[in-house]
Length: 103
Image (cartoon, rainbow, N blue to C red; front, side, top):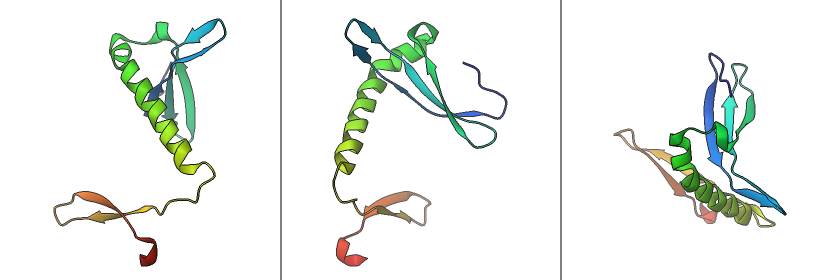
């Protein structure tokens, strides 16, 4: 995988995938190009560094849990009220969910 000058990695996530007679552990990398567009690259296990391999299983479990949480939250259900962002005088940011009657 090549990252050109001015591009940056936005996120990366691991995935354990398999089917009848095969299995793979790709690392998916999302890159923002200099034009602002996103692209997805895939690192196969043999391309992954020791540091990536060390973090792989944790990322795969978190990815699976997050995908399930998003799927459950938005599958045929009304959209939740988005949280509001509040910035305190010290610059810290907190998110608060609005009550539906406060709209």
